[in-house]
Image 1 (spheres, helix red, strand yellow):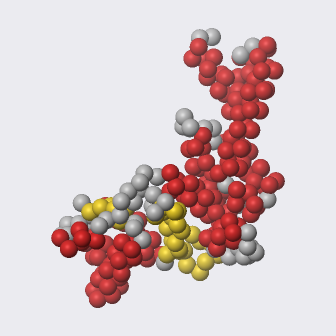
Image 2 (cartoon, one colour):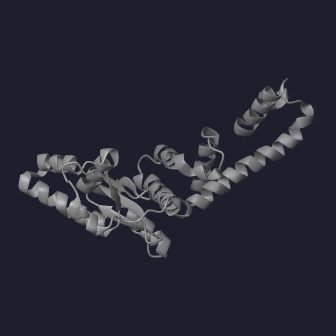
Image 3 (spheres, one colour):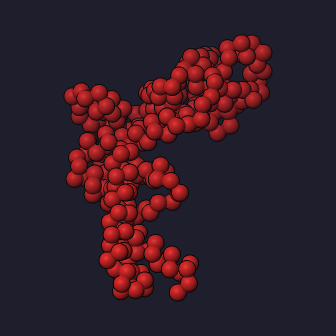
Length: 248
């Protein structure tokens, strides 16, 4: 067995507890492999517990442990740093708790908060720039810390109650899917629930940034007068929140 094969068998034994992979490494390796595998799984479990404390509180330690073990079994680390490992946990929770959307949405909120906190710094767009902008060609650039998510449940007030130690609301499904913005402003990470229309507008702008394209899209949905007015109010809100950092 060459080095590459040995490394592959070692990885297989750690990730899947494969008896065949362990046997391929030799009988004398069994005891050491058990120690390594225990450390491997404990480290990944600790990573998920640290990344999702509110999810753990919400569903309970036992249910969280079961979900985490399922995720670890199905999703070995894919990056050089454990900081990236929590990325897919919300999707695992969505599969495990299909009738409780607040569970995976809580996980999305916690992950978005962490990502927003460590995102690159950016200065907000100076208001003086607006006077000279060509709105027909302007493409808006948003802060790198912005995360946008769609919520089907009251996960945001649940998260707020969990984080502040307040009485927990009962889980509820929303009558209409809403949006949630997470971003960092002046070194503070913020959350803001938004209506579905604003969430969709932001998704469009994050794809191509065209403000005139946004105006056309809103006019198609709301009519000319209401659509242009809505575009102006959204722009004012994003500028006030320091979400926009540049114009191309």
